[in-house]
Each structure stands twice: as structure tokens, then as C-alpha cells.
Image (spheres, rainbow, N blue to C red):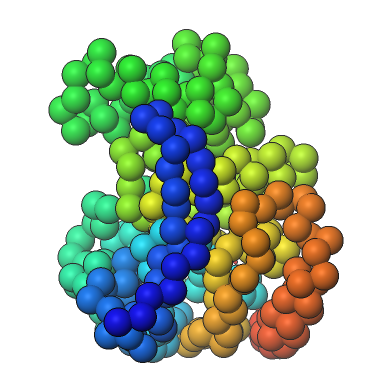
Amino acid sequence: MLYRIQIKALSYRRGGWKLRLAENDPIQNEQTGGAEPPMIELAGVTKEYVKPSGEVHTVLRDLHLRMAKGEFCSFVGPTGCGKSTTLGLIAGFEQPTGGTVKIQGEPLQGLNKQAACVFQTDNTFPWKTVIDNVSLGLRLRGISKAEAYDEARVWIERVGLKGFEKHYPHQLSGGMRKRVALAQCLIVQPQILLMDESFSALDVHTRSLMENELLTIWEETSASVVFITHDLEEAIALSDRVIVLTAGPSATIKGDYRIHLPRPRNVSEIRFDPEFLKLHEKIWNDLRDEVMISYEQSYQSR
Ligand SMILES: Nc1ncnc2c1ncn2[C@@H]1O[C@H](COP(=O)(O)OP(=O)(O)OP(=O)(O)O)[C@@H](O)[C@H]1O
């Protein structure tokens, strides 16, 4: 059996050096008959809503996608095409009306317990301090306060907030609150991190810092990331794969691009890499057509 082994990152973590290998991608798994099921699979997923008029509105139609463990996958597409709906289906917030969402080969029923979400708006609880916010997930799992605090301190330091343990969210900047939200999610070591336009409300400099920090932290975990964004540059800079959705209604996958840019990456610098520019041009050609279709639809419906 052939396995493609690629070093993704070498990092130092508590307990020693950690070598992160790129997972065999699903296509490779299919070709080699690899036994490990994909972390996430959308098997012919369709999502419809019934409007108050009784008319059926098909948001997503027959999506087929397999995401490997540890893969960083971004979704881009015109506004309203169904990106957040896709994320909601993987989170288990919504059930598909056709097809199946599978997590590690098992059909997802109810909420996805392997996943944690970071949204555009703050996930933090305003009445709790940073350390209480970050330790909450562990406390809810029955871990003692002392142990949860110890682990929370590690994550607070890892996201660059050492010294802010006793601050409340309103005493922090937007970027700092986003760091709290990340630590809050990652402390429970989710297998899947779902991010819906998580950085879009940040200023451009903070955003770029947070993107780099996300990559550093992600490279130390084996989490698969589903990242929803309007920003194609951000998608390419961060991801292993960029999925382009068609304009809705009945959106489906138009393109699935592998981003073979070297890691570790600096998101501000990688944008000047000639390979990045080529990828951007290629994906934008696909995306632009869909954006134009969506724009024409919204213009006609006025
Ligand atoms: N609960 C719901 N009931 C009815 N329609 C819904 C519901 N949730 C989403 N939709 C519709 O599904 C479509 C896709 O919405 P979604 O938020 O997934 O798109 P998006 O690509 O994330 O949008 P944006 O880029 O603007 O954030 C929209 O037409 C929206 O109105």
C-alpha cells in the first residue's frame, strides 16, 4: 500500500517536539483503498427550506465532499449562496433534507460533538472573566476548577493573553476577544474547528496577526478546519483546499482547489508568492462568474 508522507510542521509543545505529517488526502485514500474514513463527508447533501408561502427554496443541492483529518478547507462563494448553511449542517445545527453528513464515517445525528465553532460575533460570555470563559468547556465536562484553570492558563498564554486572565471581555480589544474565543474552542481539543467569517470584523492588521496565530495553533493540533470567508486571498493563504460554491439557489460545488503552498506560512508574505498569484487568478476566474450571476439575480429581483 502506498502512502504519501509530507511533513506539515515541526513544532515544540509541552512534552517535546511534535512532528505533524500531512494526512493522506481523501483522493489518495480512495486510490490506495486506505482504511481511515474522511473526518467530514458530505454525501449528496441537499438543504431545502419551506417558505411561509409553501414554496420550497433549495439552498444547497447534492454536495459531495470529503475532508481528511487535519485538513484546512475554506469555502468561498457569492453572498447568500449557502456557505453558512453548509457549516451549520456540519455542526449539526441543521439537518439535511437529502443526503448524509458523515463524521469519521458515521452519519451525524444531532449536534456534532467533535466540533467547536468560532463565529464573526463574539463567542465570549460578557459576565465571565477571560479565565472563566476559556475554562468553561472543561468545567462543563466535569473537570475540577483547579485543573480547568491550569489548562486555561496554558491556552491563554498560547493565544498571547498572559496577564489578562482576570479581565472581562469588554475590557479587551476585538482581536483579544477573538483570541479568547479561539482558546475557548481549542481547550476542549475539538477534532473539527468550524469558523464562520471569524476574522471579518477585525481591522486589517489584527486580522493578519490572527490568521498567522490561527495557523501556528492549528499546526500544533490535528483539527480539521472548515473556514467560511468572502475573502479569496484569506482562503488561499490559510488553506490546504479552497472550495468554490456556485451562486444560489441550488448551490453546488463548482471548484475544489488544492493549495500546495509551503507551510509554515506567513499569510502577509505568501500573498506575494508567484504560485499564490497564479492560484488566485485561476480560482477568481471561477468565482467571478458566480458573483456576476448572483449580482444579476439580485438586480433582476429588485
Ligand atoms: N432558516 C432559514 N430559513 C429559510 N431560508 C434560510 C434559512 N437559513 C438560510 N436561508 C437561506 O439560505 C440561503 C443561504 O444562506 P447562507 O447564510 O447559508 O448563505 P451565505 O453564503 O453564508 O451568505 P453570506 O455570504 O451573505 O454570509 C439564503 O438564501 C438564506 O436566505
